[in-house]
Image 1 (cartoon, rainbow, N blue to C red):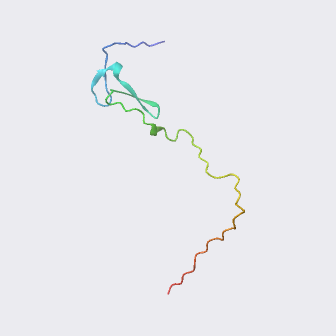
Image 2: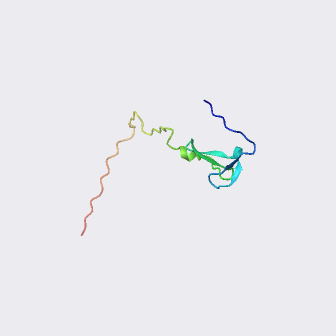
Image 3: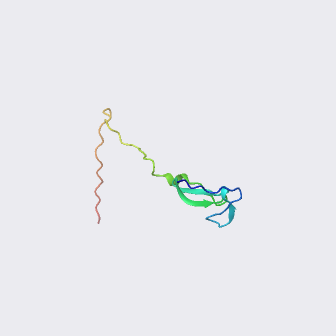
Length: 89
């Protein structure tokens, strides 16, 4: 069973943010993280979904460690650092 809705050029709708009346065809839906919120807002109240809302949705692989490391044999090995002893009076 298909429900049909009336379509009218002069149908009015109310903006969910500012509460003013606008043509229903000019109201736009809002989205948060790409999902619809169900709010219809006018053009002056419309905020596009910010790209920063999508952080963390895409896995990022940023390897920094080397798999096979080999020390340079041309230079002598550096002795480990030993702090000097201090004596207190």
